Length: 406
Image (cartoon, rainbow, N blue to C red; front, side, top):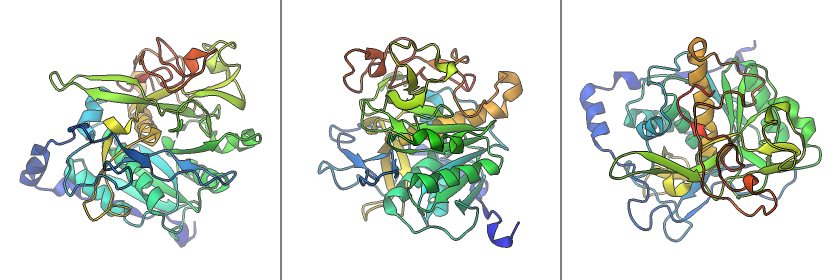
């Protein structure tokens, strides 16, 4: 392989932080979404659609001040769920699991500060050293132009992998642009590196030729997760692909008295029935009267910005600080990709086989069934937009309860 295309790895030295420093950092609990009446009630898209055909937007929302414009940034970690919250909410295996597995993140454009930002996040929460690798869509180090919106998406994605699978290595593949052709090329490159899972926190409106792009998301033995969208009832591509795990979104609430978590469907989560993608055989639990084609979503995780997650971002942040809170199904996709990696690390015990990236509907027992909440109106097929027992559009079969379902 030519020298220019060799992967450049950055090994974080989080593990050598002194015990005193780590203890002091962990003493500041923070992370209480909706800690006041205003927080989390206003948010905005990080990289909204630009109207161009065959181009994706990222599916993340940043919490803002009451003006709905200025990100609610702080100089220290104050709000949003931290790794221990997410691990507890989804009963994830201990932080010692996942070692040796790599989760790939595919995003558009460059975040030149991602390595430092990721290190800051992992240091703050006392996460172990991992190998982080950043390349362009062909594996080189001539990165695409920077973009602060997609840069925030990048920080969100790598932080969520860190939170859900602290020992997983991370491969970030930056596409030249947000066109489906560049993003698809980045997915293909990520798959060529032998990763366990590939997370894609982006999507665009369905189009008549989208089936011709499905092959780029079909990689045997690799779990490919895709966010379902942030605009409520309606389907995006590539979440509509039959070869991916389409990840919907929930509102994740932590009881102030007991610390227990509960979930409802998030009103912004994408869902519905694809117009163009054939119904896969593994969705035969969904009646043809509900959806005769590919239905979205398969599973879900936290996505509501009002119960969002903490992210460290120094690239697109404001002068008020680098700690932000994000929501959107962009949060959910890397979390689920990381749970796949946790399951793969314990493959023999869980008897899990990843099949072409799509979600194995036969492994439904180890999931939290989300049974309330809605993301819109679908009068004649209510399960496509309203959560209920079993499968539904906004939350799929449910959220992780350990890694056994993956």
